[in-house]
Every structure is written in C-alpha cells, then in structure tokens.
Amino acid sequence: MLTRALEQQLNFLREIDRLKTVLRQSPLLDRSRKENSAEHSWHLAMYALLLQEHAGGPVNVSRVVQMLLLHDIVEIDVGDFPIHGGSSPAQQAEQEARAAARLFGLLPPEQGDRFLALWQEFEGAESEDAKFAKALDRFQPLLINVFTGGGTWTENGVSMEQVFSRYGPVIQRGAPGLWAVCEVWVGQHFAG
Amino acid sequence: MLTRALEQQLNFLREIDRLKTVLRQSPLLDRSRKENSAEHSWHLAMYALLLQEHAGGPVNVSRVVQMLLLHDIVEIDVGDFPIHGGSSPAQQAEQEARAAARLFGLLPPEQGDRFLALWQEFEGAESEDAKFAKALDRFQPLLINVFTGGGTWTENGVSMEQVFSRYGPVIQRGAPGLWAVCEVWVGQHFAG
Image (cartoon, rainbow over all chains, first blue to last red; front, side, top):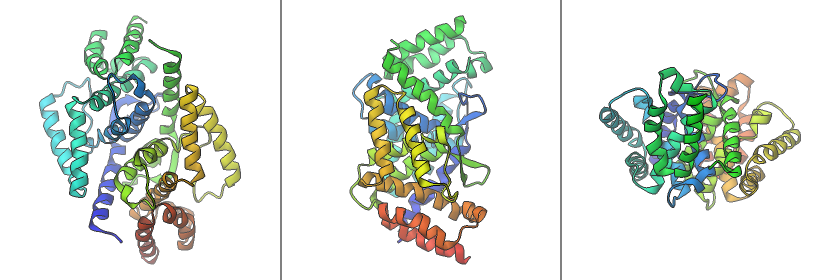
C-alpha cells in the first residue's frame, strides 16, 4: 500500500535524481567530461569504505558513508561552490542550510530530521566521523588534479601555496597519513 | 608514507573511476541522457538508507549499502547487461566473475577478499541483505520507467506480462511491500 510515508520517501528519491545533473569543476580521470555530484558522492563512499584505517581518530565507517552519500544533496538547489571560486562562505552556508531544510523536509519528519542532523554534523566538521568525511571530500579532487596533470589548479592558475592552504588543513585534520602522501605529490606536481 | 597497501587502494580507486562512463539503458528522470552505473549505484545506496523498513526480512542496512555501492563495479570490464537484452545468464555470470576477480584483486588481499565475498553474496541473492539489495536494483529502474512514461519498456516493446515476470519475483522476494505498490503502477501504466 502506498502510505503517506512511502509517498514522501519516493518523492525525495525522485527529487534527488537531479544531483546527477549538477556538474563539478573536476574532470573524470579520462578527462572526457566534468564529474557530476552524484557519481562524486558514490566515489567518496568507496573512498571511505577502503581508507577507513587512515582516519585521524576512531570512526564509524557506516555513518561516514551515509554522510558522504548525502553531503552534496543541497547542490540540487544551490549548485556546486568551487573550492577555487572565491565565493563568500557565509552566504554559501546560508543558502545550503535553506536547501537542506527544503530537501530533507520532503521526507517523513523523523527520517528527515535524522538526515538533516547528519548533514549538519558533516558541515560542522567537529566529530571524528565528520572530520574524516571532510578530509576525503578534499582528498578525492586533489587526487584527480594530480592524476590529470593539474586539472582545476591549471585551469584556475592555483599556486602550490594555495593548494597547501586550501586542502592541507582539512585533509590533515581528518586523515593525517593521507595528507603526508599528498604533500609529496603536490610538491612533485609543482616542481615538474 | 605511501605504503604498498595504500598504493593498491589508490590504484583501485582510480580504476573504478571508469564506472562513471558505463552507460545503462535507463534515462535520468529529466530524460536528458542515459544514467551511468556510478550515479545509479549512489542512488541505490540512498534507496537502501531510506527504504530499509520495506525489506522482507531483518537486514543490516550498512551491509546492504556496501553491496549496492560495489555491485556494478564488474561492468567496468564487461559493460551493463540490460534486463531486456536477452543475453545468456550463464555467459554473463562467467564474464562478471572474471571481472570481479581482476578488479577486487587490485586491492590488498584481505580487503579484496572481503569485497569479493560481498559481491558474491549479492550475486547469490540468498541472504536477507542480498535479497533486499537485489530488490532495490530492480525497483529503481521500474520507478524510472513509470516516471518517464515507459522508458526502456517502450523502447524495447516490453509487455505488461514481461514486466511482471522480469521484475516481480526479485522485488517481491526482497521487498514485498514495494512490489505491491509496483503492481498498481505497472497496471496503470499499461492501461493508460
């Protein structure tokens, strides 16, 4: 029977299909096109499953995966804010909070509240789970740039110092061992 | 430090980027293009998080999500076998098993074995987790067809009886409540 709750859940699942049409700045590794936010979220969830041993503290990988699956859903309303785009963080946070309220508000209240709280925890970047999720969300595009010979760094004229300051603190905080590897790659990239 | 294990994990994460270029038969809901298998896997993981109460038996949703995240990775080597394509199930199973061995074989052995076992459990469709995951993997494309006015059914001249026989048993077995709703929609679609 199509209950009210199931109807709300299916409406939400239809609505988030649109995340497949939100384009990020990063290319696919084969450089054939830009990555979209839905497939990016899938890839990040795989990163979490594989790399949990590199988290800076004790994490619940199932919660990290959930956070990463839904972390970009707000982009359905507000689009992707590029890391090298110079947008205002306060304005971005306000727009994203409004989008989260609308989107998770489509769900049955208890479920919507739980998802909203998980999204807020990710944004807050204070819990061990959120710090690790945030670190992976920076690590994956850094890897893309390294593996595609520059990617969004070359496009945006980003310097090595800017890479260190824009990626370093977040990755180091949530996954220090991964940042140690990044430092070597980034150094090699800009020396090369 | 870039250990051998981390190097293997990153090689795997690079390799599976290619799942973003494997196209399925189903369109996006806005019909702008075909869906790819990476974003399909993301969407299915969201279905599992939201709809776990509709599973036919007790499930561990974290394992179901993991299964769904990796269930299509073999398509990197063998492509998507369409449900209405008439391919040989035995040949498909053999090709996919070879692909799974190669891809999960890129990982550190213990991790690769764990992922391979999870993929085999999904394919086996015997555990409660696998039955629910399989049901969602049929439910999502059925919804797309209903919501896009026919989708791959119209394209392939599929009859109502074929829809019932190709989707029904798998969805009913893993998520009987969802199948009850599907029956109504499918009936309405073919009557309309």
